[in-house]
Image (tube, rainbow, N blue to C red; front, top):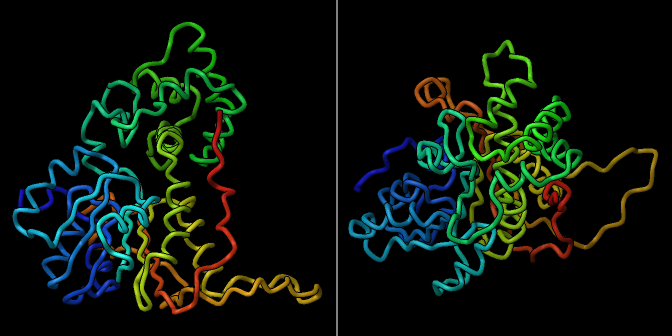
Length: 329
């Protein structure tokens, strides 16, 4: 394996923002098929510490270590635990931290992983099957109807969540829901077809995947940790794929760059917590893929990238908000 079999999303934009330099150290928080890591290593004589919670991705990527040698270090774990993983390799600080959030196309294409309604497979959805943890089947078969509706609404932004939850609870009373195919059929029966031709099961599957893997919690932990991880001038680059992720990233960066809104001019200013801006923002706006990339790579269509540069200020004393990372059940 000398190159990634899947197209890395917004690769040219990520490379331009990271600007890899000889001698620098970068973290690829979502190794996947190794597309980002390979591009960083090809662009400069740097070192990449790659992280993935899916052992099969690391096993497939092991061949890349033959090409890059000690310049590529593969680490098993979650990117929310990036600081501990980096410190375990002997580094205290790094010059860049890149995260491409969400399920990889490799995992979607493996029917047995249960991420996609395109295949009838066991309803799993765990990115890391070696660490145990509840599956999507566990959630749909055990969660109370209200909690299930809340989960689908919050993580899937599905306005028909109550109807879907009601359908699921009625169906599981007759027989346990064990496959992606049965779940998708239940959702389709509860949700009217949309004019945009998006499968009615899309948002429910997204919600379950996010819940199973605590994706928003991982993101919040990674963002808070980035202040401790990055050297002055280090770049934080996050590529997200839906509004829940982007809201967390945008809120964090605005808060930590000192650009959070001050509220009404008729009210007293909020008390200053004493934190100096730990990041500067090259742009307050997200960067979106080009029309050409969106046309050639369907996965890129909903992507957006945000970039921040670490200052020399100490990390914030205020913990990042957890309002999007509440668990259910």
